[in-house]
Structures are given as C-alpha cells and as structure tokens.
Image (tube, rainbow, N blue to C red; front, side, top):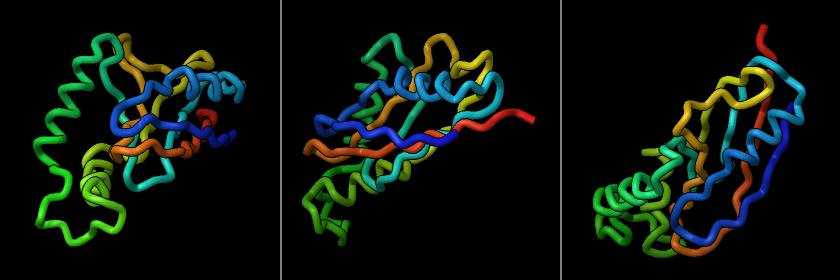
Length: 137
C-alpha cells in the first residue's frame, strides 16, 4: 500500500508526523512488514528523534545552525535566498527517507522515538511525504 500525505510547515523546525504515518500503516491492514517514509523535497527531511523532550530537537537545530550557516559566502547556489543551499545541505546530513518496522499493525518505534518532518527553509512550505507499507515475507 502507498499513500502520499501533504503537510504545511511553519518554517524552519520540526513537526511530529508519527500519528499520521501510523494511521497509514493501520489503514494498510498489514500486520508485519516495513513502512518506508520518503519526503519529495531537497530542503526538508525526515528524522527519528526523541519525542519526550523538545529540547533534543532544539539542540539538533542549534547544532545544524552553527554547522551549516545560512548565506555562507562559500555557497554558489542561492537562487531562492540565503537559506537555499543550507537547506539542501541540512537535508543531505539528516535524511530524506526512513524505514520503520511494522509489528501488530503499528509502527514498531522505541518508547521515546517519534518521526519528524524537519523543515530547513525559513518560510512556510507545503511538503509531500510518501509512505509505502509492505508485508513481511
């Protein structure tokens, strides 16, 4: 089963999409298998991260901001502004896809894990995420 979900971001930051992805898994009716989650963009990404303390995601953002600076003069690509190339680099450093096991018809994440859409651009964007659920065996 495959489904594409659309999310509107508020700009740079993380949005918890765990429930949305899990709803697709439950809708599939597959009891055991894999859920592949893929974002169709090059300046936003996906990550599995701590879901209890938002400071973890804040620390990730602070580290990325210090490591991959907006408007760095070394970047040649800046067609859409100073956060354009940094957004591309951030998505490469994080990930554009995830694979999560499915057990008992649900995502088999750890206790403190959540799936996050990570917007790397400053302005709000509409992002598409494709979820493909496959049966084991």
